[in-house]
Image (cartoon, rainbow, N blue to C red; front, side, top):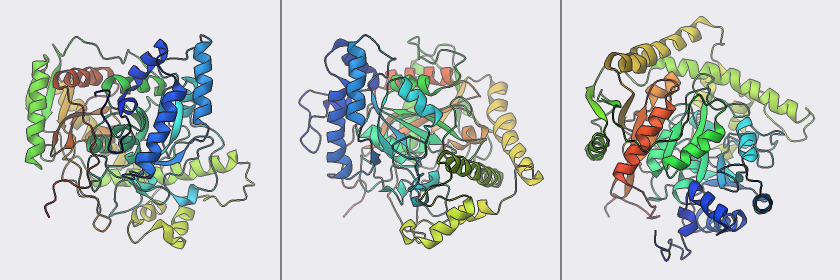
Length: 505
């Protein structure tokens, strides 16, 4: 981006488009400081998120961010550099416990009693020298509340908007994390996913999102949905930056995650063409076909078509999610109450049933626009020792693992699978809810396996993403594929903050 390029508000966009790796190099060279960058991003946040386009990516700003950045600058001057994220500002999704900034999952029921301890991943971020600039808005309860729902809406943060077209959805549930990175409020953000909540908003907002294998990143201190599917992961504007953040977030790294520059020679990639992966949007298919050619040019061997992946959504998944949500949330709430000493003056729900009752009693939760039928079902769901739950979980894993990803990859000797992540972002609609036509994230999500969204092109200025997924603990291979494709395609989406796109007067 040219030095004199301006954003729609007349402010220089240069700092906003710098990635984490680039900022680290500037910090090292003494060209700028964390305090200077943090101040610039706070100014940008006020101009774009709170006024101007009013993206509503951030529901809470860290008032101590400038002081933290200045302290990290002093450490650097004294010769102590904690790592590549030293002094780099970022956002953390607001379902992750963060001392001083809270964790609400977008629900007013959790807004009164903040957590007393950082989530483990936030501790790791602070130890690495990252500056938590604020908490990112999200689909309330990570979109596990009811249907119809509008991704990016919460009672605490209201509606996040897509920086490429303000009437379009940012995707969800890590809506603010994706839109904040895309619009240059921060170079990095942490999102979470149970089924699509990193890949969907990453695709809608044109950023790189990595959903790790379940267990790679600690879930301690994250408001839960599913013990078998939940994970946090990085969101960034480049594969390189996403990997820098993943290396800090990861509790266990059995191999070097850094992408290598040796292309894709010898890598076998399957193109999943079952119903639901392709064919629901011709323009998206055309963009992905061009990306497939780029993978081949980078040396990959494409196995095309791959079929037999099976259905991506099934009733068994909701049985599992409801049972795990009830058990997990009740345990989380008990722990948060215990952290507070139990004598809190502000009300905090003790159980999922308390949350349901709170929503019914508080009009601000807007049950008329975002029902809570999923919460109600979860509150009456079976326990984790119930045969119904165990059978559903076994069926999920058989469908997505042995008969799905593992089975197909073993049979065809594949290193990874690819398909369109989804069509371009749909129009925000609080009456009818989200309306995306197809997606390819559920197989990896239900299996608990890793996946990546890589922006590879656009339609009428709206980003289109390629989904890359594979077997458990295959992050290094998926990152290698994403980095090679990124280099080959050289697509870097830049938001335009248009009021609308694709609608004719």
